[in-house]
Length: 181
Ligand SMILES: Nc1ncnc2c1ncn2[C@@H]1O[C@H](COP(=O)(O)OP(=O)(O)OP(=O)(O)O)[C@@H](O)[C@H]1O
Ligand SMILES: [Mg+2]
Image (cartoon, rainbow, N blue to C red):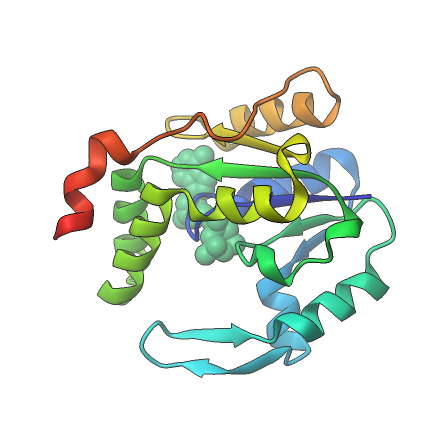
């Protein structure tokens, strides 16, 4: 079955998925690109400058498309067919590092704020655990890791050598104040 690489926008999903695809030969499906290419959206949100994914159509498309060994790269966990993903890896990144990256990307302030809040609260992990169940989800802190170091860790999770249970990474204590601005 396919592997999901997920996490808040900007944590490094596509960078990792590209390396993982080169290393393993598994095809890389960058969901945002598929959504754009095949117009699998219901509209465009001007404020956050992003497409609003048509989750039902994406789910159906992936059900037909995923055979077994793809790497699916997305933060939109709710658009995935549960039965096609054997392993989900959630990348977590220190919210202040994430904020800097999103500023460098010149994201609109409202989008930076909502993504940093999502990372502090661990929304993507919660979504992944709710959809796939704890056993299928691993969660890793990639703060300070190079893409190659992250790749190494992810390969060992895929091989079953490492297991990183979800729910252990907590930014709230450190970044509680950022939620109140
Ligand atoms: N391990 C890393 N160390 C430092 N910078 C990184 C690392 N991984 C990725 N980056 C940088 O962070 C930025 C975001 O990376 P990337 O595009 O892979 O994130 P993403 O999770 O796919 O984002 P999106 O959800 O918006 O597609 C890029 O500029 C990338 O070069
Ligand atoms: Mg990406």
